[in-house]
Length: 532
Image (cartoon, rainbow, N blue to C red; front, side, top):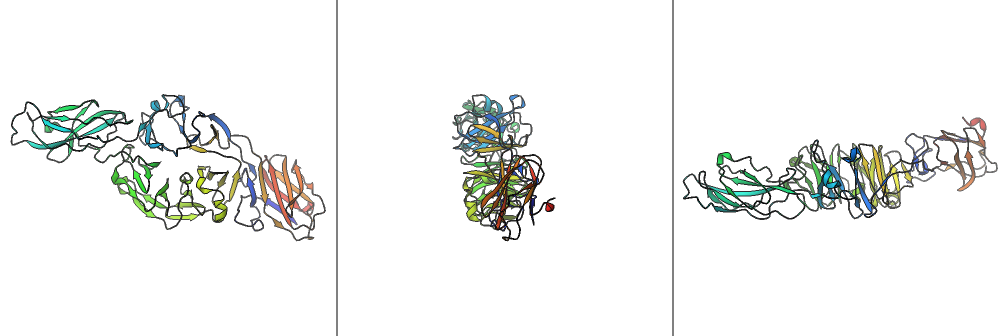
């Protein structure tokens, strides 16, 4: 009789230890099972330290400046930050945008790194506000009686940032008669509004018979009034920013979509910006849901919207033509930071387990691994998770696990307050205290893997010998019988070794391996001839 284990798998806690597959584990800790071997998972490697003053829990690698090394952005634990790069190709300002720190924000290389750490050291409010007051209109002092060619006209004003971002218009002025060659109008311009907006210009628009507001003049931000003597034929382009509202101050969950579109949400409302204009968030592009939104993720099938009720998929190529599709599963999200794009699908934490959503399908993918009670013991509401090397890597209040659908769970002795996956370097960075560390950037950890319970009828046989094939030695093997350790051996080579006698009447046998060397297979037999 022989017990032989290879092609090792992770934990399947939902099954009784006697009913596990022969190569599945009761315990799989600090082990990398992707090769089918017991390979130790490397610990974290120290990368750098953050300023100790902010208790960081949010991280972003700003890959601009600093001789190509970039900078670390970090925020305190009181925030829940989502950052996206500018969708504008070759953005001369290296802009990034984020939500979760009060109102939505934007910064540039010079703003973000111009002061002392922690970075970003400075920023601007995202969006350009509309002027708060109405332009005033009065006839010019030297004009005479209105001719028959005089037309009713009115004015609006917009603000423009130093980056060329134009905001929505002011309320329209009162109507006034105006004509070319003498019918000039003095327009009183609204004052600037307070806030961090970097307003560089005012634009004055006039409406005439065609119903469009057309550009009259571009003025310095301090300009208080303007004498409009511009002929109708000399008017400029029509007002483009009629619906370019600033984002809702409570918007969060900022996410990049294809075609230069950004998405975010507040309460039960999903928002989209104008393509390639991250400062402009038309109210007409908003979509409402039956329940409040928990988190969103861009996947190949569209935008997954996880709510406090059922999940939704939103599809479309332009923000004005997005379509909503409710998925018929009652799986509300319980943690915004658990929502992770896994490529063709996304995973998020619900009350019952991890939910996988791809296309129009959604299912509890941990239902064959964990009971609802076992899942709840992992405190899913505390999960913050990341996609790494095809795995779902989750940190929760008390530990860390990796999950690959169909392959069970592995647990790890690593904690983190936050993290960031950097696509450019293919590196997962984690926050531990005030240090930035790299996942698997350190030395090999000591792994532990314990087999299922193998039931051997008492008296039918007695195991006398064993062999462990590994890619390095030593490794430790423990043999359990009826719940107690009956033998422990530091294996030094691939040679056979003898087991103690006297345990033929025991029924329940388990094999546990521990070490820092990769192990390929384990064999325990009743006679040496059975060992390969």
